[in-house]
Image (cartoon, rainbow, N blue to C red; front, side, top):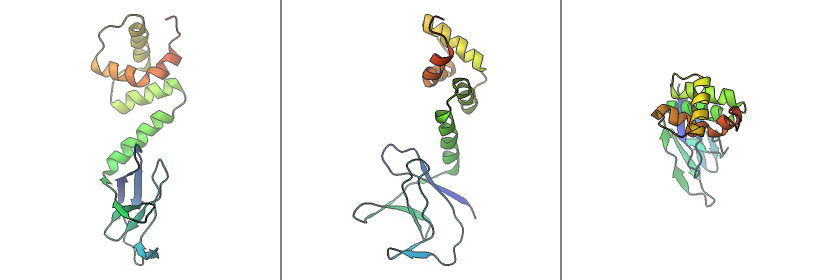
Length: 148
């Protein structure tokens, strides 16, 4: 038994279709097709069908089938971490989570001070600090008073 993940095929959706890849003795017959399970996308909630041979399909409004691209479970786990960062409402925690997620060794204060200096007088920033500032501008604006 294993966990299987596939990328959602909805335009601009970053979600995954995740299900347990267990051996089923008796698949259900739904709409004339064998179906093991009917998982939903982790983000847009679109329902998919898992059919024998462990492929995931999507049915359009005409009932035509489309194969959904398979994904690695680590991609799913990475996206789940990204979602936690995106959903974080506390700016300090959001900065901390982004630093941890990215594997940087900065403290939250390092990023705040670099942003305050950069905002006053734009100058060279390391690639990783620029990445933090570019991705966390909204949170950093809440943490750095306007006059700094």
